Image (cartoon, rainbow, N blue to C red; front, side, top):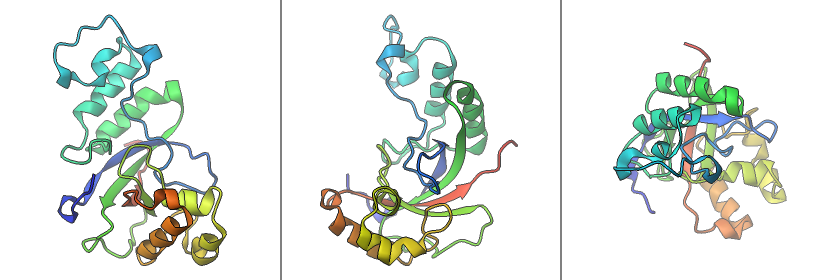
Length: 208
């Protein structure tokens, strides 16, 4: 799916588990979102409306409740698998529901831009600004930053770009992003045709 610049930015929130890679707080860590888990489905459920969503296929319980909240508060009108939540209050409510069952998740504020990001300011002075990630627009949120510089890093990319990352494993400026992605595609040919977006990320204070 090729997206036009007029579609951006997308804004919302993601619920993310702790990163398995030290020093990385980007989006490539399996965000919580409604998912088909065959072992937990209620096969006796009668679905009368396809628009009821995945939650309707689950028995009463925490997962059905969390999924329904997610489905009713998803940001509309964007790439289908980019599961952003519309507001912080719903994000916090879902977080409270899921954590006793699947562990800690943090809420991350997201602004998502295409690679033609004229409307995106070069950097941010906000105290809760985490940095910029470069990742798929949904799906498994595969990150070119994580997979090029932190997880099995490419030596050439390390030499040219590792010093531009901050303590969260993210770019602190948009300036190197296009050059980095071009070099990443050269080093990882399997991603040469993949579609990437820029994620401007913010930490969210717990509670509230």
